[in-house]
Image (cartoon, rainbow, N blue to C red; front, side):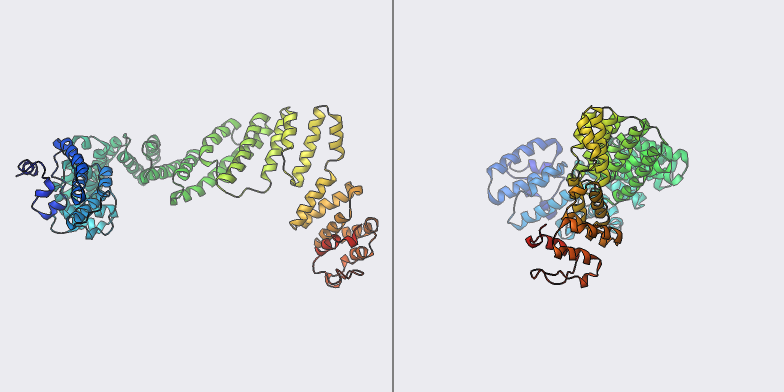
Length: 582
């Protein structure tokens, strides 16, 4: 007597799970629920779960989970089976069996599967569950051991479960070379119209044909399957690409590339999308299309940033990007074509550390060609990329790049006749700026004032290209960073260009910088100036002694600071004492 007929023979408050004789059926039997009576069973179980208590409510909930699982409503079944805590051994075993079955039907692994009721030899379908477990774990040995008997266990499953697992069982048989099971499985698949006519049916038929070296038939089925929009269509496109790469002919490579490119966005979110993109990038490189290869590598980086493929793509993308922008900078491609490429690359690479520099390179070329507005927009884009890159990705920003870009934005404004906008941008340069940037900014500022007819500001800027205050501030910053060569240049410029503003502190710093760079000529010049800068005998002796070995240097007449100076920097501490004030 069938399970449903047995159910009809008992009282309405007795459930199928309670009248089955075999232990394995009491633990879990997905075949006992009729699809034609799903609504009635579902409704009655919902009522019973709401009105029952204790272990009876646990039993009804596990019945509910089994009903859902038998109809492949796996997410809902998972929530139900995990929503109770059984106390009896019977219900504990049922929960363990159902939880393991739901995980395996979802393609997940089961921890300690061998300890679950599904793995016990007294279950007639244990080989079926062992086969699914081998597939989920990627264990070929276990798969070969159990799959023949496991396929026989299909007869103990509901129609929905058979439909759900048949493709995986068929593919496993094909991949392990079990042609007997594969042939039967494909025949059974042909009896399920929606599977047979779908991408999965053509993909599996193609995979089987390829496994027996019938490549022409495989190609026909793969091409038919590749027109779909699901995972099996993506797998078919991958199979076509791999066949083309193995063939190596230019025509085959181009055809495979077009197939992958047309369907690249049809399936997303798992390893098959990654493999499609990876093969597409390889094919683009093989046929010499560097731009398309770069775009695909950029997609891999953006969508699968933590994968090994993304690390490889990063290296290749950096090389290809540098080559493309180098061609643009050398005028090997037109600015319009370069800009088209730039805009296509940008969505994927804009937050990489190098892309701001590449954007600046493009803007430089646009400015040379007279495209002042395009240059300004790209300089501003580069500046935005630098600022957002620091905030969002925490990558290291090259020293001084922001001031350099602001200067270039100002120059683009100036070249385009927007003089007030140029001055506004120049006012945003942070201090202390690099000496070259500072001097260029001062020169551009003077030109802008001249174009605006502001003679007073023009003359002031022109006659004091760099003020003594700004020179001193920049020089002190460099000295604090022990950039003695640059500090010496700036203090020397301060001494020569602004002699009236050159004070005792400047002289001491210049002495230190000159001594650190072994510039005895500057040491002599500054020492000569000391009598004009201070009346302190101790400091005059200090200046004269700067050319002596520091171990011999002693400050006379000052008991508070008497002793040897270990470093030239100690002079600064001397200057801070009132006794030696000018």
